[in-house]
Amino acid sequence: MIEIRTSALRESKPHEYLLRFLFGGLCSLLAGLVAKRYGPEIGGLFLAFPAIFPAGASLIESHERRKKRAIGKDGTLRGRMAAASDAAGAALGCVGLALFGWTLWQLLPRLHSALCLVLASLVWLVITPGLWELRRRRFLARRCRGRSKVSG
Image (cartoon, rainbow, N blue to C red):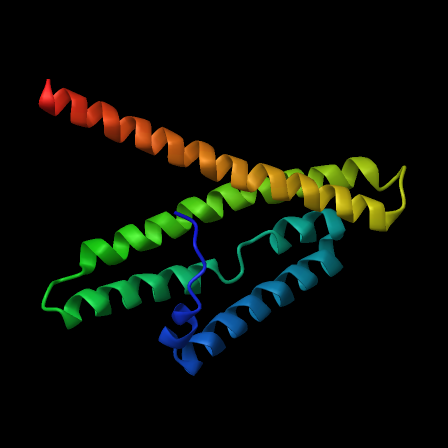
């Protein structure tokens, strides 16, 4: 389920935010250097790198593992599952981002840039949650088929 948990903000320590900030900044710097050397098309490919995802995934995994260990369980599998779920969301977000970029690429030569940004954002806003919902329904359908095989 998609949810917003503001309590998760308190779970992270200042050094974890700093790690994400530094990693994101380094990725942006690298993309800028590549763009300066090889042009904006190639630089844009590097800018599309999920700058804070690697740091975020490792932090999610360690937070989930820590929670399970606090109640006397290993938590390794739970941490990996939480990071994998985050990766699934990142993959779907990348599809939305690609369509956002494609929309801008197609519309910018013909329309005002502000309108292009609004339209591309709408594409992203419709596609990404739509893909998440499709994934969720597929997961639920698979889960229901698995139960009917066990009971049948």
